[in-house]
Amino acid sequence: MIRKDYPIYYRKLYTGVAVIEMNKKPADYRIDFSIEYKPTGNKDIIVSFIDSIDYPLIPINRELKHFISDLDSNDALPD
Image (cartoon, rainbow, N blue to C red):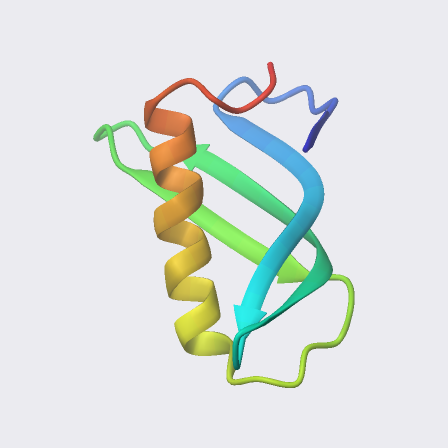
């Protein structure tokens, strides 16, 4: 993952590759995602796929958002 330079301190933009296993077969998909920190302490995570994906996006987005949130909570994302 690579963090993109963005001048707003409460929003972080990243680009990377998500390795998603569907039907026991891994596939790589390029993604962009952002994490916006709200004044209430909540995080808003938005994921965008650069590559087209042949699978329902709602369950994949839900899992990616959870995974990204865990990475952020554990300080595993690049600064």
